Image (cartoon, rainbow, N blue to C red; front, side, top):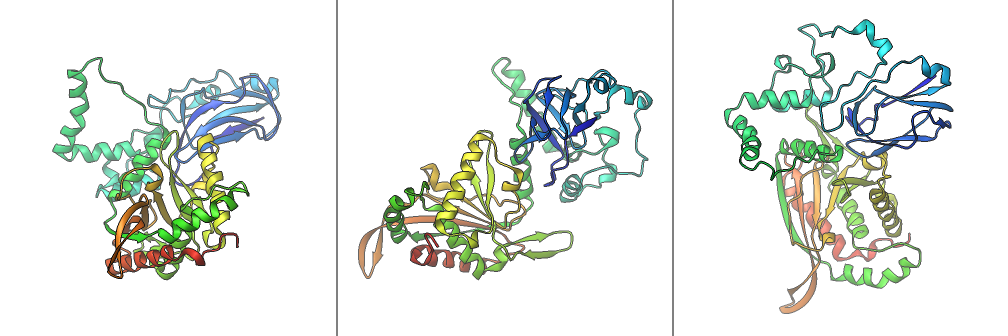
Length: 413
């Protein structure tokens, strides 16, 4: 008999949401057959069966599970009958328990085991959150299994230490009291929770923004000229692959922008590879997909990969590996069809992000004459601990140089 566990998939992911069982309890399944979809902070993961046999589901749909929890058992019917009653799990909208042992194995452990008073049980992410908020984690009472300290424990501890924050926390109760029946509480998806966590991480980064304009007339003409040829290959050509390639060239000239910051060691990790993250709209919230080794791909290859990744996003088949290990991120605000400039939030642990606006017809002055041009506004946000203002301007100037003369970029390679 084998167990299907919610394994550690990395990226600091500690919990998941059982979205959908693909088989029924008691079904016969094949080895490597996907049996359950679990939504994590990053993606929907299809967990396969480790062996062939009958399945006994241990966790119902719409449950929260933690790393190490048993999702199901696979084996002979006689083996499964000896497991005992399957424990019920809390739905995702309520606090979840992480103890996934079968009832027969839990009899000996019916007395909760509390850690030694000096022992602190917490994940690295929770410890970092405590450090970022100047909280002595040893003074925080853990509400997780075995006294584990959770993110909410840190946040609650911080709010109790601050009067104004505590008053703000009570405001939803006041609103509900005044508007009974007119309010709906919407549970946050794992993706939305991850977005919230990343935004909070970004708030701890001292940032600054540099903005400028690009004369994208040549770029516009190239895309217009090459689009029919590229579409014959089954690939949609947009401005974004050119922006990605130009960004890579700018990163090569300004290597500090292609790095991350190790706060504990106070070191800058300069990366010699170019994995460009792309902020992508998804049905369940914003995700960042990654064009890996973008420096080694031509325009059409990048355009094709963007197309494939967006299809996976819409079908919710994107993998965690396709959303990890960025070195720099781009958010293509202009693709949404509105706005001019915005100030994006850095995608931790990157030290920089490019916000590309919408190309618009605008007048420019050239050799003393007013001419129409296609203007692309952009904003660069950097971690000021790593990149200074002068470096940001140099990066922006390099980006302008390449995008205003994009003929050098290889279309087909």
